[in-house]
Image (cartoon, rainbow, N blue to C red):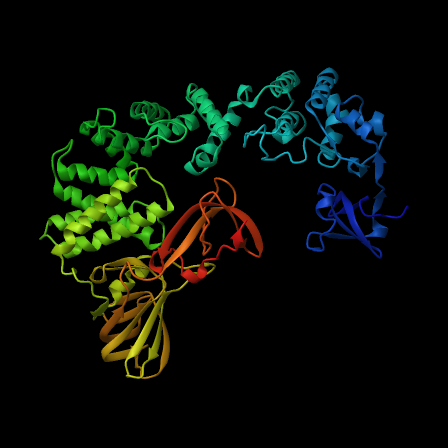
Length: 640
């Protein structure tokens, strides 16, 4: 047996089957190998042996590498001769190597498909397809990267020529890609010929498959991508949307209907056009959000010069509400409250809003800013202000307005939703009107209370455990610092969501610290506590009793003193919102570089590596407005 070298193929029987392996390296009489069908080059410089198979050199059959010329590889790819005619009875095929990887062109593929048709499927499978499958990626490919996202003639997200030809090749040669047991060579030949001819044309004139056009539409069907698209890319987006709308393609209909709804860079606002497309969509897609959008169009009279069509709005909001759409539910509440398109019924309206508030509170408590809590808390404030089913309560109304104001500011900073400016203006106006009627005109930043549960309630609403760190002060009183504990595997637990109307405050807090005053009793696990320090874990509070899984773990009877700053005080921190790839998820980083602007590129640390990322937003927040504790945010390293 000749000397075994890295890159050679060896074979042996393991677990009852004869298998082939590529040799990575030789260590004395041991061969470090990987499965033959793995890409050898992926492992050449890798020192991690977790993937490796160790074989004894004396127990394997050796299949030395056979080097062939590029011309012969090209002949094989074009099926100008069978594998055996070109290379003899070499097996396994993967032992063949070539000094260069050959790129299979459309003309090469066309030649091979024509020969396959001539020879018939069974002969072509034996003479050409089977060996070519084994050598795909090893001796030849369709491009340097068949999944490349490099622009084509300046257009992003258009497939490269190699990608188009690979899909035709796959439909012929790879059984798991085929729609039938035997490929339709006539159809594949025709498709290859059309593709070769098509690629001679400018991109807008090429007749790509609908699936490619649909994928292109999806890539640009968001505001972030439309903002950075070239004029040519936007023109192609509109071209594909209009073409596929004619075929009742859902992706295109959605893209155009919601583009016309208010307008964007692709389409000018056209309420009637949006309405008509939404109605078409409702016939082919059971999506309650379509009905919700139609409800808005009719409620605000978008197609009738501002004259509401309440009967139609009520009809479509009912469909949306039945489908669980929050907006439809609170708009129905508005209609019942005012008697728009339905008999006035304030009790029904109040019940709908109360249910929605209880359901949506958890989203803002969890730190989700893209939710409907602002709209619902605003309506809660309106009901309490008007005294629905009870006396009017300006203090209670201000409480809900503060929550609505915080939530809408968070949403506007992190997202761009049509109509949010109007929502924010309405909330601000209500706050200005109600504040003089409350007992909170002059803010008070030191709170005295006998019940601490209200400050911590967001943790209990989310069914989270809370840690209380107790420390004795020199005065003999205690300081108690509360924080929400992370769950197993959770990197960051939610922060406390706190509303203190006395201090004109609503926001997030990493921890809450209170001092005791006039301490009456402190017991931990039933025993009187007089020590200096203690830690107690609990998941609920029942008046003075702190409980864990229903058992009392601490009893604390005292007056609590809680101090905090007002909502407009405190240091402001500058953030940038970035994306690692255009159109991908946004990530927030602290940024103290003053001249960073939207559209710039900056360098950030992710894990242990530096990345150049795109700046898509610049904003300021104080600590009570951040989703995560301030210490958890990473900082921008520098401008790119």
